[in-house]
Image 1 (cartoon, protein in one colour):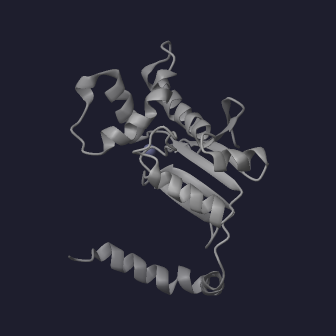
Image 2 (image 1 turned 135 degrees about the horizontal axis):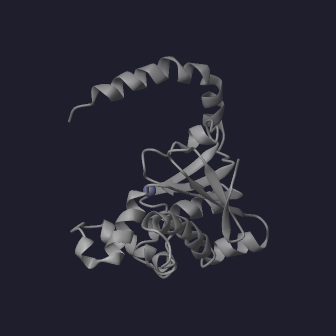
Length: 209
Ligand SMILES: [Zn+2]
């Protein structure tokens, strides 16, 4: 096993510069339990820099990433354990009061699911991804027929965010916190090329600017 050069160089730069600048904050953070201001569930996509976008500092955001930022339904028992473990810890232990589902444009996971559900010929012989993305079936079913292809995929990305929020409410401990106004759930969709973020307001996505 070899440590890649970029890793060493970037780490050394971070340690000498960024870490030094925030040393006191890191020291303080290690003495107490973390108290994040929000949990963010987003996609594994490398183009999403949530800490940069939302000015994250040490301890601010509790992050969970998976392919296509899915919160699986309670019925998807083979798929939900990892995401729900992260949510359970965030809500029961850390008592985080804001849960953000951050989806995005150009999502490879959503696009693959779209093609796969459109035509079985497009199914790759993935060992795991096919099963994971089967969670997107309900969102896919809601795509209107009268949209252009690119609009359908954007709709699908946004529908997936709505569906994930609906799925959250299937879990009693989450539903209870929402009903008691102890948990605020936010749906966001981020457009990579423009930096635009839209938020889910009732049933539509509105510009955050
Ligand atoms: Zn994605």
